[in-house]
Length: 136
Image (cartoon, rainbow, N blue to C red; front, side):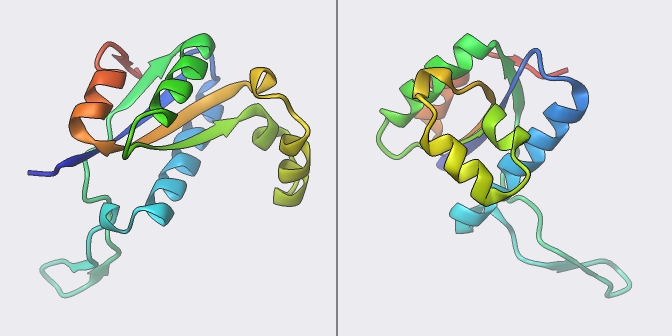
């Protein structure tokens, strides 16, 4: 049984394209920072290779913008929980340098989160996100 868990939480007001992009970007960030999240490459019955996929199920949940702020703060305060976020500053930037420069001058209260990726001990992630609905 997996002792850690991954959850992606998307802003409930995000348009579908933004929500999909947010989930994809959070997946990349999670995979980069947590080596155990991506399984080994595999092969099909004909021997054709297939790149490794997530070794974890990843529920995609939804929350209000206000709840995303609260959830990020609560998750960051938990031991062993890693928070990855996608925000409006990143979405509007034309380059990573522009994003980093703009974010460095943005007050935390002014950041509009489009989504969060959470990784950590199953019990901690469940207690943080157990009341959230699936994104549909």
